[in-house]
Image (cartoon, rainbow, N blue to C red; front, side, top):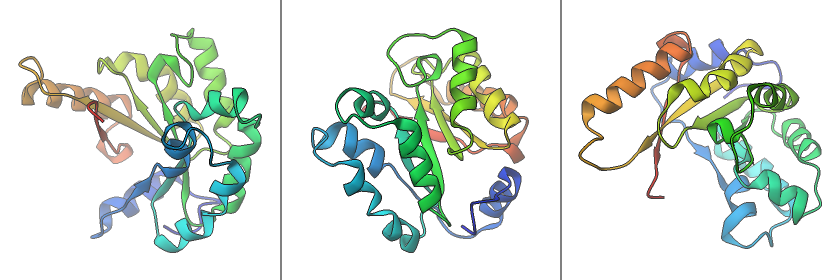
Length: 199
């Protein structure tokens, strides 16, 4: 992508649609820090990879969200706001991204709408792409997040939680996808992720 310091979400989405290339996101900084190596990779280790992400040409770097938020606070003694700001200032041509668990946001219970909205507002200055899933694909749960993200001119990326069962037919997934497109204000404003719940 081009300079992300002053990006317009609509310009980025148009560029994606007009592109003939496949664009990739790395979840490495978030996922490595929260699970794979029991937090042995520190923030100073992870952010040293930023120049490599820039050279590789990733669309976005998912460096925030999921369990990373609480691991930063409880295990790593790291301020999530400082971490997000550092990534934002380091990545010049790559978008920053977070993973949000619907109404659980970055926690482990359902939060009230005012907490959800304030949480989004607190991080929109440093997070460009907001990947959000609801494990039951209940799209109305995503509405407060989507409204705040879109209002701030950032990219909201709803994720379909995919699994195989008799109830989860092609028609079911098409219905969920249509609800997500409507939530984001139409297909020109939407990129959809498919999240394999089997890992």
